Length: 512
Image (cartoon, rainbow, N blue to C red):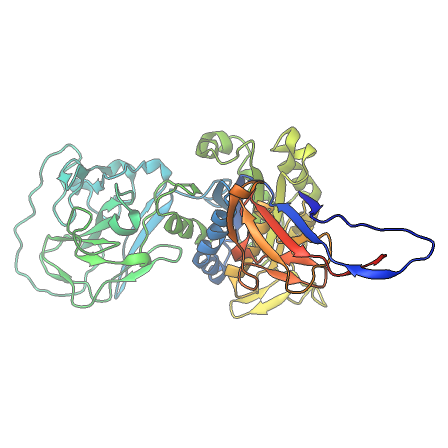
């Protein structure tokens, strides 16, 4: 919204015989940044075999996207789905599913896989019943139970100690025989026996897991690693060992700052996922949770169906049984879908049918307001000279032309970016403009006299609303070609605030 006023009225005096001169006038242009709009963003990730670098790049640059949302002062939610419509993530808002793979120098030793049905409780570890301490049993939820032993301040768990049975019966460790260690562990001797994916504090510091030695020998942990099927990978420090029938806890942060002792810290190299499927500004450890959701690995099907994958999120019975409870799709929010893929979409419906489907999710608003749904894409955007050639290449690999994704973006005024661009932070900032609908440019009503332009930011329409005067070259630039004020993504005026430009008009020839 913009209105203008001239502080000195322009007087044109007419006569049959006229002299001419030049008169300068002060002018004030007032612009209001677009009002705040809530955003529900669904990111559909290609989880096929060629996408690991792109997933990691998006995960690393999550902060740039969120910083743009926060600068715009919008209410945002982010959910993640995948392009794999036949695998375990079909139709799901990703979250609550994870795994820990334990490997030694000779190969895999143990693996625990969980999903959202495991129902982790904040501050309560889940422990393996020692009567089922085997690699064949510790994948089954019925062999795990919530810890009952008090740990620190109202926490429950026994990191580094023997677990009782699920009936609460204490189990004494066997008396060790002759210790032939330290030696490398064999399958069945070193097990994952306790998990704390949902701490009562900050997950980035306080989550942990426990490894137990089920042998009479000291086991060397040299060359032992913990990983998942995404980006997590942590090699335990050299020289570490576990005593016969002993246990050791590995956490995000070593020490006792979370109320219990954790001898080994893995930092960001090991993130245990719990059942957070929609991330908001209020989500604790939002960055780590986003990284886990986005880093879906490369085990998805090779027939990528991004549009169909997004649609299935809202189809029954999956929507009612799994996704609706997250509160993801809000009536008053812009519904934005971002497809990230190095292949074109192979979904069964025509593109315009998917666009109509997503608009229909917003009810009448979807048809009254064409901007209530935005489909955007980070894909190959350059048409190749031949169909058998890629759209673009980068250090991360090649990307094929995303024709159907580009068509979907065009139908909904969405944004498109090249997946071959290395700077995902810049991509995230540009995409945020589409999602928040904030303006970068404000056109002046008249040409300013050089050196007279003063631009200020106001919270309201009166003088008392002044926030500060903006600095040319830092907060904004003046673009002579177009006579406009330009703001970059990092310095956008927040939603609903006023940009006031005062200047002397360039000299106007008038009759005297």
